[in-house]
Structures are given as structure tokens and as C-alpha cells.
Image 1: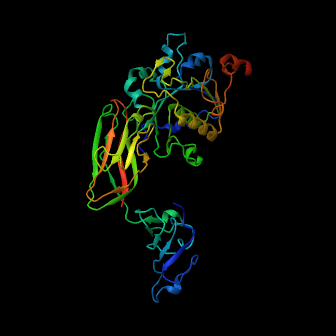
Image 2: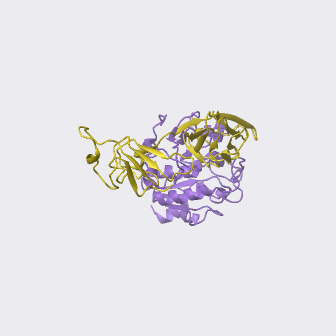
Image 3: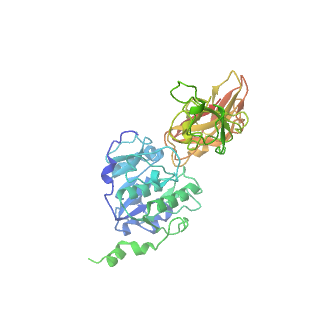
Length: 232
Length: 206
């Protein structure tokens, strides 16, 4: 395993027992604005365009953590990501070793089966710094990172996976597949069941079956609802 | 291939399945039992006698292996596991490294080998030396033939997305037979530029 350039272990169980928001980039993200939530969040790929989106006032929302796994992000959006220099960013090694900015943390992209059926190989608590992980899309990494950090409730928004896979909240991204690959959904289910965390898909108009990830009403989890649920 | 359920001694003679002692057949003054020669159907069952009781260096003749495939195994470890037994005579060769994004529809050919004698390819893999992204790579393909651009050995198969460095795709063998002075030719067909991923093709043969 290549030597990590920054020690990812400092994040292990940093948020034990807490709730986090996993933010996808689907077009339905605009229907569940992340700034309406009061949880730590993990964003990915082109989420840095959200705070510049002209469709509504987002109040400068940015995720707490950021994940990218594809070289096209490194290649095409370098300047955009510079705005996230102060945000911890998680990328695979050796895939994106050429990408260097402040606050980069690297996890090992492990060769081998995509989804080993033996949970022992998938879920040691230190998997992100020693064993490495496999994934089929970036949300798989967001989920595993959240687990590594100790989050036990994961709320998901911006997960659409509709007929037009290339559609994002800001427009179209050409390299994306039009149809959702079956391993994406299979991965969600295996990860949810393997991690034992409470995982809820709050995305409106999502095409991810409830048998894969249970759904819930996003308004029950907003900042305002949280105040009602947990009075000061 | 199924695992062996009943193996018999060809040498030393007179032993029977399940025996744990070979001493009565070992010549006097020899400090330990000689390696044995076993025969039977199926692949070696390394945690069951007689596979557990024979010494390293012992041979096992598998009588029901696929036609033209390896039929002889040897014991190389005392771990009490199937992996203690290895097929004899396998060789490995590889192609050059292909770059996935050599251009949309652009072909790139490599000849892995031209054997002096007929060979049988029993396994083919695509091993990634540069990771692929979560989309895009599947538009590139690989085929292996006994002629340039042929698909006699492995039919054209798409590359995989989200592959880590060192991971591999198992390629389905259509026909592993390569005649003497024939060739093993790999054809890569690429995709447009700026797509991550490089790989080589590895074959196992005897």
C-alpha cells in the first residue's frame, strides 16, 4: 500500500454515534436544499457548484467533508476545488496521487472483488487507512467514510438515479452512464446491511427502491424539525 | 471442477484411502515416508486423507480434468488446505500495457507469443495498472485471437469501471487451443482521450 500523504486515521470514530448528511449531485438535490439541515455533511464530485447555483439563495452552503474518486474531477475541476482548500477532502490512492491541494486525505483503493461476501474483509474499523476499500461509485465511498468516522445515522439527499443518469443539479455531465448500473444499487444494499447504520434516503423523486435504502420525509429532519425534536 | 471424494494410492502400492501411515511400505533405513503417487477424480481435497497424510513432493493424477488441460498436481505445503496442491506445468505470459484512451475506436494490437509447440490457454485476465473511473472505461474493449484482430480465444469484452490498480477482470475462454507456430494476439479498441485506465492481458497456459 502506498504511504498516505496525510494521516486519515485522525477521522476514525471522530463522530461516533452522530448523524450525518450524505449529499449526492442528482437534479433532485434542489428539492431538498442541504442548507435546510443542521448536520455535518459529506459532499462529492461537483458539489462545489452548489453554492454558486443561480436557481436559489443557498446562503453559501458547503459540505463539512468532500470526496472524489474520478480522474475527470481532478482534471476538469481543479480551479473549482481550490475554493475547498479549507475542507478535508478524501481521494483514493494511487488513482489520484497527482492531485495535490491542502487538506487532502488518501485512502487505498483496494484491488480484488467489488463486494467481497465476507464482511470481515469489508468492515474492520480501520479499513480506510490499511485495508483499503472498493467502490463502484462515489456515494459508496461517502457511505464507507461516514461509517469510518463513526456516524450511525446517515441521511441521504440528492440521490435520484433516474432515467437520465447524466443529469445533475447544475446540468448534464457527459461521462456518466444513462442507466443506473446494477452494482450501484447492489452496493448500497450491501453497505447498508453490512454497516448496521441507520440509513435513510430523504431524496424527493428518487428512483432508488425502498428495499435498497429506506425512505423518509426530509422535512422531519430539517433544521426546524430538529429544534422541535431537541428543544434547548 | 468438483473436489475429489475418493483418491487411491498408485505408489506406494497396498495403501488404501484414509490411511494415515505409509511406514509399512517405506524401505527400511529411510527416515521418513517416501512421497506418494495418488490418483482419482476431482481436484485435490487438501484437508482430507490421503491428501493430508502424504509428504510434500507427492503427485496426484486427476483423471477427469477437462480434455487437453493439466492432469497432474503436486503437494507443495503442509497447510491441510486445497492450496497445498498445485497444478504442474503451467506458464504465464503477458501483453504490453494498453492505454484505454488511445482514441475512440482506435485499435492497438500486441502479439503475446508464438509458441513452438501447441499450447492450451486455461486462464486469461485483464490486469489494471492504472485505475479506471466510475464511468467511461466500459466503452473500451479487449479481444484475444489466434490472428491479429481475432476473437478465437476471448471474444471482445468491455473494460470495467471503478477498477483499482492491481485488480483484474477474468476473461471467458472461448477456445484455449493454440497450434504450434500459431499466435496469441491481443486487440485493444480504445475510447476518446482523457479517460483514466491502463491494463495488460495475462494468460496462463501449458
